[in-house]
Length: 218
Length: 232
Image 1 (cartoon, one colour):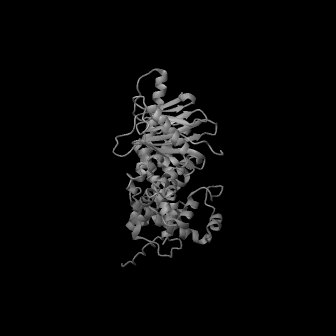
Image 2 (image 1 turned 120 degrees about the vertical axis):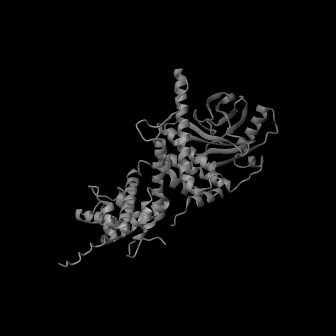
Image 3 (image 1 turned 90 degrees about the vertical axis):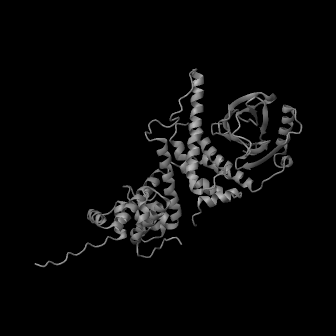
C-alpha cells in the first residue's frame, strides 16, 4: 500500500472520511503518547489528554491545512494540555494546603528529565520522522528493517535470527545482506528528504546500489 | 627507479558499507570502509546516511513498545472518527435533528433550557452518535457553543466525563465557566472549571446522565444528557 501523506489524510477527514481519521491516529499515536510520558501525570490523566489532543484535532481540522506541520501541531497541543493538567493539579493541591499561586515554569515536566521541553518535542517529532520514513519505505523493506532492528525476530544474544527472518519474509538467507543494504540506503535517502537529522542521509544519492531491487516500491 | 603504480583500494560495496552501519562488519572491513570514507566523499556520505538511518530505526524499534499508548486510550481516540464521519453529514437543521436518535434527550434539554432561562424558543440542535461502547458520546450545538462530551467508565467502576465546549468561529475565544454533574432534583454532584481551551474532565458518580454547562455569571447555558445505556 502506498504512503498517503498527512495532508491528504487531513483533507479526507475534512470530507468526513473516518478511515482517514484512523490512519492519522495510528500514524501519530506514539508521537502524542511520547510527549505525555514526559510529563508527571496520572495514567488516567494521560489517557484523557491523549483523547483531548485528537479531539482538538477534530475540532481544528479546518485550520490545520499544512500536513507537514501536523506532528508539531500535535506535539504542541499535547504539551499545552499537559501544562494545563499539571497546573490544575497543583492549584488543587495548593488550594487544599492554603498556599499561593503556582510557579508556571516547567509545569509538570519530569524533573529527572534534564532535557528541555523543546528537546522533548524535537525528539518526539524526529521519532515521528523515522516512523514516517519507514511507512514511506513500505513493503518488505520496512518489514526487513523492523525485523533486523526490532526485538521480535532476534536470537537469545540479541542477534537477528536470519533463519526466522528468511522464513517469515520469504527471503533467502543469502539475499538478506544485499537487500538490507539496499533498504538501508533507500531509507537514508527518504529520511534525508524528510529533513531528518543533519540531512546527511539525503546526500547519499551519488552512490546507489547497482543490483536489482526486489523490494523497491514502485 | 621507476616504481609500479600502487593498486587503488577496491571501492567498498554498498553491502559492506551497510554492514558497518548496521554494526556487524568484521574489523578489517570496518577499517577499510573508514579509510575509504576519508578519501571519497560519496562513500563518506553514504556511510553517514546509513548510520543515521540505522541508529534511528534501532532507537525507534527499541522504544516502540514503551511509546505505545494504552489500548483503551487509542480506542477512544479512534472513536473520534465518528465525529469526523459526522462532518460528512452536516449540516443538520436546528431543532430538526432532535427528531433523530436523541429525540428524548433533545426534548429534555429544550424543556430544561426553557425552564432554566425562561426562554421557550431556545434553539437547540443536538446531534448524537454511538461509539463501540454504546451511547456514551454526545455532541451538539447550543447557540454559538459546540458541545462534545464522552462518558468513560474505568475498570475500577469509577466514571469520568471528558469533553470540550467550543464557540463557533467568530463567536469569540474559548468559553469560560464550569460543568456540573446533576443528580435528582437538579442537585450538583460534582463540578469542574473549563480550562482555557474549553476542555474539561469531571469525575462523576456512576450512572450520571446529565451535566449542566454553567457560564461565569453562574447561569445555566445548557444541559447535556445521555440516552440510556444499551447493553454494556
